[in-house]
Image 1 (cartoon, rainbow, N blue to C red):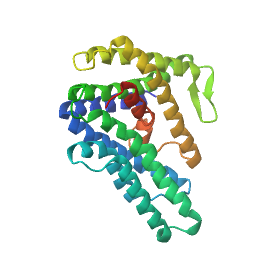
Image 2 (cartoon, helix red, strand yellow):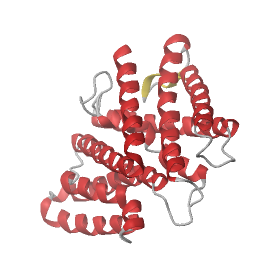
Image 3 (cartoon, rainbow, N blue to C red):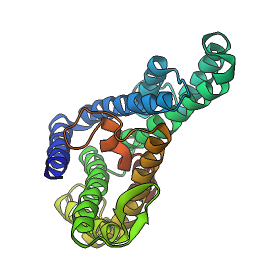
Image 4 (cartoon, one colour):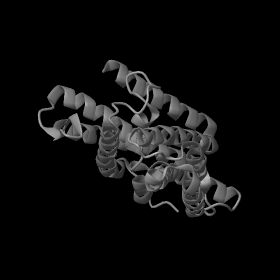
Length: 277
């Protein structure tokens, strides 16, 4: 358990450092890379469940979908909807000749679902990071907002783990994730609220004036709750594929998907809560 906590904290400190050192553009590249690696493991889970997604081309389209807001601001094309439509057309053509008749529908559905659930959801980090004309938030402010969501979601994970180990008695979803407890969830949300307030205070010179530490704490609560749901969704998928971890890349954690699971639903929610253009 200590290895898991250490790996989680160390990895996200590295991510924070890289994003802060190389600014918004570096952060966009990092998000795109993490999205593609997550999608790779996501497709592996679906393949283990017998759905036969198109992995390599799916990952290529996933990169395009994830980075499309940045490309649209700098090049003018494509919109994320355009990239998704193109992907559906390409994969609809491919299933006619490249999959067994009994698996064609599953292959198309699995490939497109991966693009939506992973690439499109994580794309909202790129939306948050990408400055727009007449922006109401500075580039540094956008970077802090991105880091804020990540910190809130991941410290919710840590808080839930530690509180659950110390005080957990009542199982939250025993058929999905037996170790998760309601006590752990409460501890995770409370820690996330504290982290949300702290980041809002530390970034007060770059963040919008209305995002005070108190507002940051209140906004952190729904982010933390959705992070828990997002983590449970990955658990459902792993159980469907009869796999414990999505990979073995990270000691004590598993794969990249095991690290990003709580971010997939929180990225778009954070974007909507911040009401960014």
